[in-house]
Length: 72
Image (cartoon, rainbow, N blue to C red; front, top):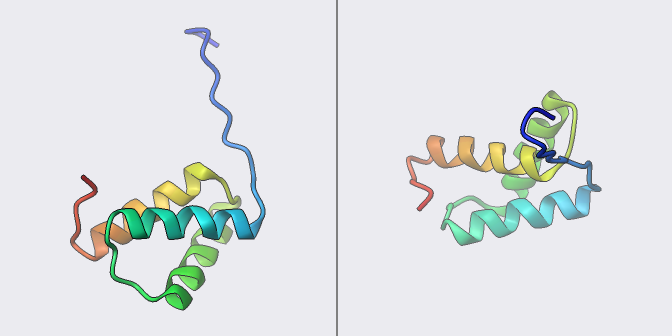
């Protein structure tokens, strides 16, 4: 409100969440099988209490760090 800008991080369903993380993983060449990707992403979203684009991006950043990949 301070700057007149409001960003919404809206919840999405699991299929949309998986589509987001798969797209990020493909885009950044993260070498992980889909089953593991999905399982980790579900755990990540449950521990953060939401499924959204923001949570998907945070998971991908964590995954990239664990895989020692940069997100260019």
